[in-house]
Length: 109
Image (cartoon, rainbow, N blue to C red; front, side, top):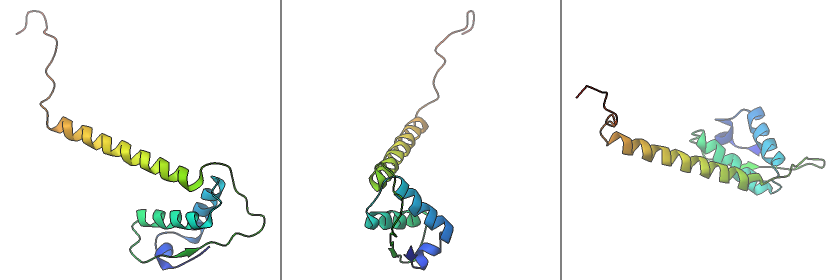
């Protein structure tokens, strides 16, 4: 993995390599998509510098089976949607009066 300081500002060598390895083990074989996902991950960590990355695969590299980058992106979209729905529910609840007690205790008014 060759990358510029925009990556190294937010990740150590070990963290970046572990991230790439994880994406490969999730089944991704397209090195361009792996680099894109790495850069997206760095952006999510608030990297403020410009970034570039090059990934060279050596003979014997192991790839898993799975959805790779597409699976990661789908999970991220689902998490963002769930967070958005939760925020909408909280916003709706903040605008409402507290629920009234539905039960009346015998003898009380």
